[in-house]
Image (cartoon, rainbow, N blue to C red; front, side, top):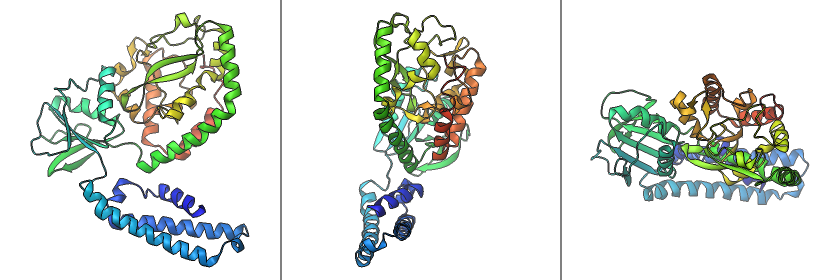
Length: 397
């Protein structure tokens, strides 16, 4: 068991389960064997330091190690030789989107006609982006064949979709291009890469569960007390539910403790809470000042709609001054390439509270995009630690 746990930890860190590694037989064998070797050495070292080596039969350990190495090599070889053949040489689900420009030379298994389905990369229509997100949700690689005047819009949509996105190359336009790709003998412009590899996503999800499950169990008495206080303080439900923009620009329903009078609730989030907001109840004001109203989002994390750390999810009607968030900067849609978080880089930098002017949104957006470009598990841990220092904040109201 110790060897298995050690191997999985080292393998994830070394990206042994990266799709590119699986499709490269030599690299696949090299990394997996190296990870197992390190795990075996670590177990030997640990048992020696803990003076537990006498409890392990040396012959059994040696034979088990040799068999583990043998089965690992055989399993990888069989997968590369036979598994990839069954999947047409690719571990990715690929989709071709035809938007006004046909691609007759591409015989891809999955293809859709965007205009026939009423799909358009309209960056001013969140409902449309939600529909597109539904179509892209099960795919790893998406290729779009479109008119030149739609390239920027599709590029923005793909960059916010947590996928490898490419635009079929019909001309020499270089808008938003980060590389050149190929599919079925034709060239493409690569315009997006998922911000996290498969192993990084597994590590991040593991961190969420490691913290969230114990937190829900430990905080259950507090959650019950808060729920009772809300119920005694004002009429209405204990929880406030609202549609927010999540990963791939898809909508999900966020859960928070209700802090406003039920009859004054703002479903679309057009009016941000202010310091002296008369809609906030007595209990609600305390919950907001201490950030306790955010605790039910732990259940959103458990369900997989949110992460502990990530860009904060916003309501569709959120305004910065007199403009909707995405009207100020279309890169707003890119921030949704990762799951939204209970906390994030913007929050620990103090960018909280009402967005009264354009700059309030720009500062948060810059922090969110910085987080996407430079994610690491150590940064998530640092943000979680820093969040504890700003739970009570002057902009929390």
